[in-house]
Image 1 (cartoon, rainbow, N blue to C red):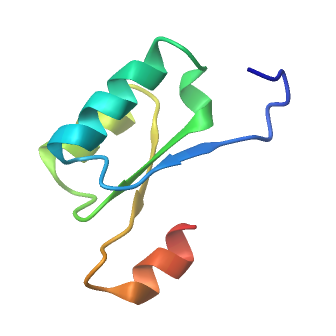
Image 2: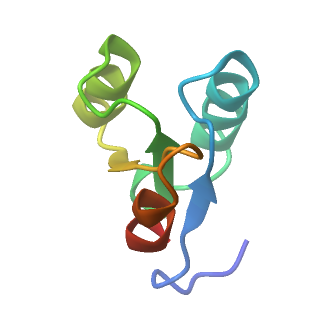
Amino acid sequence: MTSNNSRKIFVTGASGQLGRLVVEALLVRVPTETIIAGVRSPDSVVAQDFRRRGIEVRKADYTEPETLLAAF
């Protein structure tokens, strides 16, 4: 991976089953600050766990397209 710290990896559906696995796999490969977790519910237990671990969390709900624009 490049040493350019301005690059981020945005995981959509990060609080779902597959999304959580993707985030976990990334955590062993890239710095925590490069990961952004897109979640439907930023107040969920999973989102809170991501924050506690230093992962940026953004609301990205496919049923609310305006949240996607803001998240990305």
